[in-house]
Image 1 (cartoon, rainbow, N blue to C red):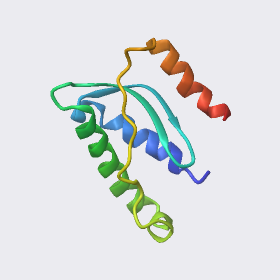
Image 2 (image 1 turned 90 degrees about the horizontal axis):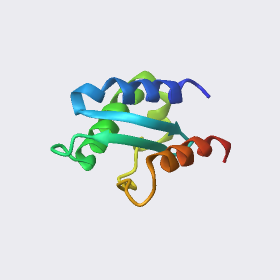
Image 3 (image 1 turned 30 degrees about the vertical axis):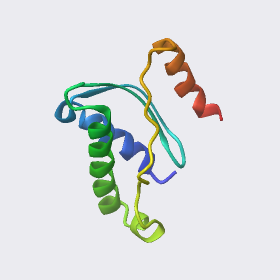
Amino acid sequence: KDGIDTRLRELILEKQDEYEYRVLEMEIMPDHVHLLMDVNPKLGVYYVVNRIKGYSSSVLRNEFPSLKRKLPTLWTHSKFISSVGAVTLEAVRKYIEDQKNV
């Protein structure tokens, strides 16, 4: 890869204090990202995910101009968000970790 995935990982991790979340597990795939996060409930998951998407899009498109030419937008408006409750935290961690091998 051309370093975009590494930079995206850095950007997601560096905003944890400002946006009040903790990344527990992360896997960056070619066309999406798996994140297991602990989010401040006062801010909410949708707020945090939208902030991460906006910030990372702005920085990545400035640092990697080829993204501007390839894609009209870096992120789609869609997202899948679910709370962890029906399964253990460890099961979710394993699922995300296993995505590397898919």
